Image (cartoon, rainbow, N blue to C red; front, side):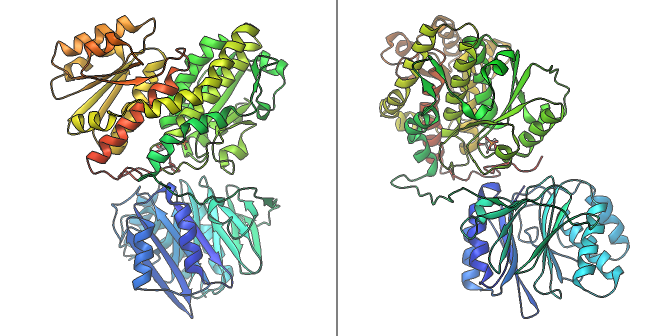
Length: 615
Ligand code: G6P
């Protein structure tokens, strides 16, 4: 995974690299490091933990120079230690490399080089690549820019796996090499300065002119020029894009954590997801970004929704929405499964990939696989400058603003809102009447106000969280639209509190999960006052019969639920197809308060990253 930033120019590199790394911290925060070259010396600094730790180290042990490469790591190969942090060097210690991706044949290469006398200091695949480059460089003779490029090319031809890299050498001044295969890399073109980064967010404060590199391309950077070549050394045509993207400075404002702020933003982010997209005259949704005419949409006979993590859970709700409102057969796939499966898809299948960041490696691979099979593939993304947003054939932006908390919250409700609009649109060009369409629009328009209410209507929530904060585990259940909320709520709690949690359809309780029920394992039962309430009530009784505490999530004022549960979290009434957007919110808050009570790092939970950019 990881993020890389490189700079070459006239300014001091360290502040530019540090600022860029901070903007890429969503890609991993196990460790960070950089190397600057100055007057023939390489100065390497590395630190386990957040970018802030590296910044503090640089405060104590400053570096200078106008050329540098840097990295924020999410560990794949090798523990989270200073030694495994990037940059890595070759055998001579003069060639330095930062890397995003996974070198799959690193063990074979390492063993070969160990037999030749190479000594490795880390357990990483990246150090192996650095040594391989150094080995080829020494085979080529003098250390020159041309030889360095040739050594990089030869090495990249030998490795299997994925990489986005930046390389430099102590003895080749004013020169940085970048290359990519499978991991994103963007070149930022400045005046007498150039940049490389995993994501435009790291360079937009310095330049708006960028080139998105393609797989198997190498870029050679000098302060005032650059060249893009193929792996075999031929010049490549490229397109300079102007980035229309504000690197928003986000602050927590009055909130102690980004996650809490983002939970509280949902009334406005859901409104923003709908803004300008509802037509009362036509009783439908307008989604121009799909780039599809009504007759093309009419031809669609099947929808495939793909995502990872929370985006996958939103997609599961999308399946129910699409089937309920549009009567369209819908499949939901985890991106990592879809990319290797042979999911049956005919020419009437329309694919959507859902991704907040637009950078998740498996989701991107699924997009490409769907396109490779000839299917129109659309994106539902938040990050407008992301790879998925660029590569998809159209789509719908979430307009939710930056989501910084690693645990996704507002992006989930925005995705579900967009899937509701999409289902309304697909329904209206099939058999949903205009009066039904109008009714759905009216309900949608009330959502932001209901979200504001749900955020206020459970003042007892922090106490409920404290009561259950020390539980060994927690079970979550719900039916129909609430089944996906149950698994999303379980994911929220486990990722930020490290409590073992499981979510499942309520009726599955009897098929195994009930074995876990005891007085120490609370169950959250999402049981709105709907047609299936009695069924959920039976499940609640089954849990209680085994002394399991029950937290209900139910419709405001529903006395019957209150009678059969230990605690209740309330939501305003809404039709079943909109209820997930409401019921998930007190459960996001429950997860948040439990994690805070347990003293966990809510915004940056251990071992996670905001965007998983490796397979
Ligand atoms: C990571 C994050 C999750 C997120 C998932 C998909 O696992 O920690 O919060 O849901 O990636 O991310 P995406 O950016 O594709 O929506």
